[in-house]
Image: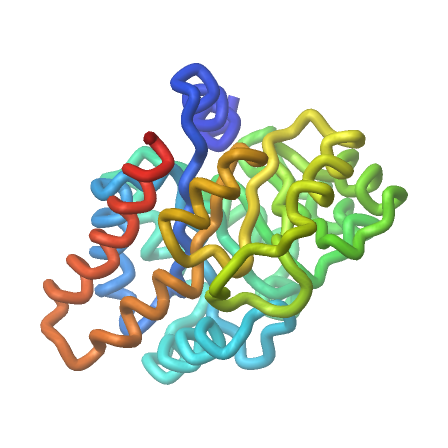
Length: 267
């Protein structure tokens, strides 16, 4: 049983919803990301989605695009991100899910990326522009069940696509709450519940909802229908809004947001 499966089973027993903050590795520096990952676990995060900065993202809105630019300007690359994960893995227990675009991984080498991810302690891969039809390209290099493949479904996904994603996914399915790119929104889509109900017709995996969730109230609303809540842009906004502050202040700001969301989810 890998860390993601173990975490979802543990939370199910405790009748809790998984809280998964997203951060961009290297925003604004890799040293800060290392401290932030440990801070997020201490604040109550159940898993962490760690983004690989990329200059031409397809699914990310302005907030995460700017985070990627800050990370790239600081010289962040994949090798450094793997070194970071290896270092923090020795100090934290929660699952780390690496999110990046296919071009970055293809350039690194598909066999090499899987091997490296398994070696340093990555628990899952999210590659938004890798279609589930092409999953075998990376899956064939896995040595066991340590590294999960997580695919996305959107409200526009056909039922045929939902069936396919269920077959190719491991551990959970990433459900996009609304159409468009990532970014904080003032309210959730009125169609979210219907969308998740439709996905459940094809899958028994936990559903984790991302895109647009920025407040504890919205996290609780999502938790009524899903097993996981993914929060990205709201976290990045706390970093961006405090870049002129001391590092300690930025860590406290992000930690406060995550603590509030976790407390709200726990009721």
